Image (cartoon, rainbow, N blue to C red; front, side, top):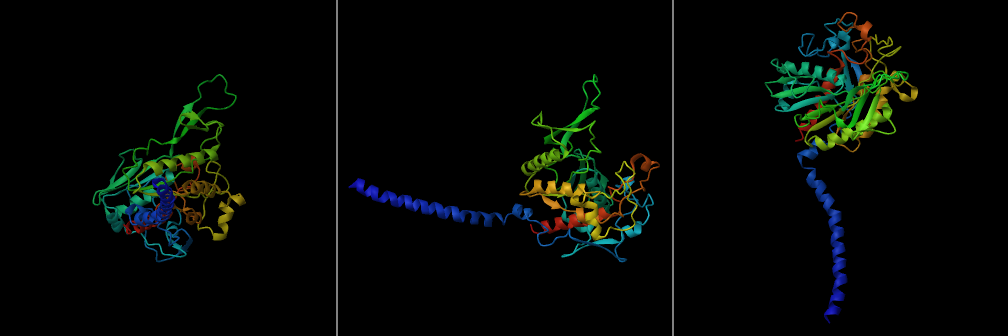
Length: 404
């Protein structure tokens, strides 16, 4: 009798267990998603531009645009970008163009309001000199709200400032490849027929020393890389050689494949090691406007007005073999690497593509600078286009923090 009872109940128990497991697996994700969406961390990951594509628009020339926040006397200037001091032509017109998004508005930063919002928080820029260009504009604008700001170079920062009225630090860490790299001269001079002088060893899985230990210090981080990934920086006689887990990658990688592997590893490191509540941006490429040659080949950018929209693809579209196509090519690799992460794209490329008129060009502030280094058609005059970058970044940060 007990055996019969057991055999009749046992299938029922199995059936009820399966029903319970089905209901549990169906409704648990719904509960989890609803629960997690109310947490600050989840809100922090929400895309601030999901309701407003602030990166799509046009430059409009207006006589009523407010004067720049700063001039040539800002103590955080870098001389070669100080276009007022260097008497660059058309600075008034350069700063009369206003970026107007097509489907939303862009507010001009309120330095006092922004520093109040960021009180007791810190902002870090990590990458190449285009992020430094960005930083200098940011520092000069924020100084309007705190003239007691002091230069700051602790924790391995290349340059930065501390704003004591608000206990806010904004700084830049120079790491042009993001990954660690080091010069290794050729060990033997027996045969110089190959022309190799040495190599730059790149450890694709190790962040550069300049920023590896600052991940816990900043509440906002803005990353970039790209402009050093070219054969003008690393020609065949001094190439990049890529290492992983301490060993050379075999077969050896070219520049594009090397960049892809570095991006994958750096993004993985950021996702794993940078605190979840840190707001992370990746600034896409700041386009160059060289015409008639590269920076070291008498390239020029003596434009007096922005490009027209129909000209952009001629200059930048890889399918047209545009003379400055690298920016969009690199952006494609960066976007692929960032898919599925909480790192937000700061897509300043297109709005900057228009502004062929806003580079330092020949106005570099030092005698014979152009003869030595060529025209600067890569960085931007200050005040100038980076001030618009600051407006955008400040608005995105504000949009996110106000949801907390």
